[in-house]
Image (cartoon, rainbow, N blue to C red; front, top):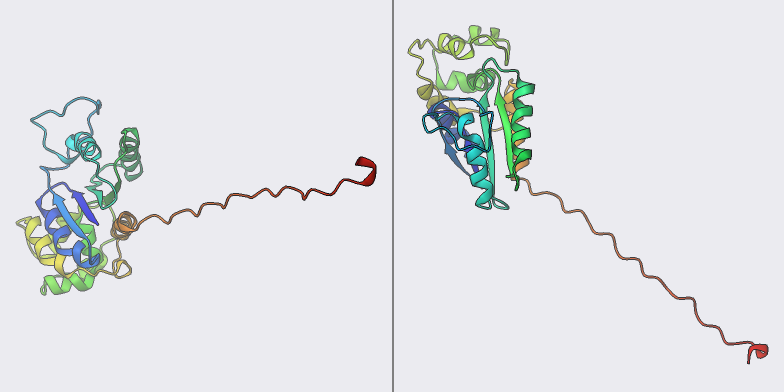
Length: 227
């Protein structure tokens, strides 16, 4: 299975490239970075504004293009977006409604990092220590998982990096993150793993019910009176 992963930017691409293929051996992942999160357009039928390059800005047009190209069977689409300050339930609902409004509907799953993808990294303390040996693990343990607290800033303090180099963070920790979702404290990371598993697992065919064979009653010999 080939999974096309639509993400906000280069740091998310670095994370997916370092983790996904290890977690799902035998499958390939092609990551498509954008210039930020963007915003879903009010009119999904209109052509996207050429000045806007965010993931959500271009998402309706890209999903239409994938669907029109016949992305089925051996291809699937994963959309990974940060919640930031958005309500996760409302954001997910809007994304699903978008996909359901398209005809044909692409084979797509949406997953949301709460609050930012750095929540995934803070969820895997073992990988964090391997990638950043001098990390403040006490501070990392104090983080309330998947909370809205300025997660990227929190991660920067944990690893002692005030340059806010998110790409470098992802490149270091992505290849070290556990492939077993149970080893990560982040609910949104486990949901990401479940979403990819859902995409790459072929649906179980529903067995067809055998056609009922109607047997005609055996013809009886006419009685003597009927002869």
